[in-house]
Image (cartoon, rainbow, N blue to C red; front, top):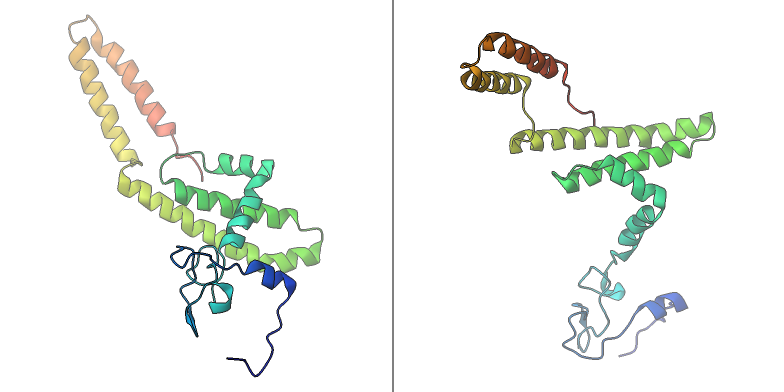
Length: 194
């Protein structure tokens, strides 16, 4: 059946559409053609070829890999997401921070700063939400302790010390010095900043 019009395609588009040789090929487009199922290869990450509306996810993956191929980006990503817990969320935080840094580094004058303000503000809000989510997940997983819990742990350690040292002469003095050091250490401890 001939179409009443001619479809013009660039050589690039023609070169990107590959036909499958085997009808059972798992990469075969799921779109319908006049003579049955389409014989084109589906786009990467899609069930359909370009002619049937398939969009390749390869470009997005290539963009992510491009950002990570630069040595400074890989190093910076490692610095920003060095903890093992909830790794994927930390990676997202690290990538968002890295993109903010790149945006700041691209600013050369006041007009660039004004133009970048909106996107940077949006990115900062995104990082804030991601950090809050990571913090909440860590609390729910029990990876973070409240200061009262740490003080209770210090008291338990003190009781263990008293039980173990009570046979020594002047053990109270030793336990008091140790307790003072434990309490001072707990009081001065802070959470690492994100």
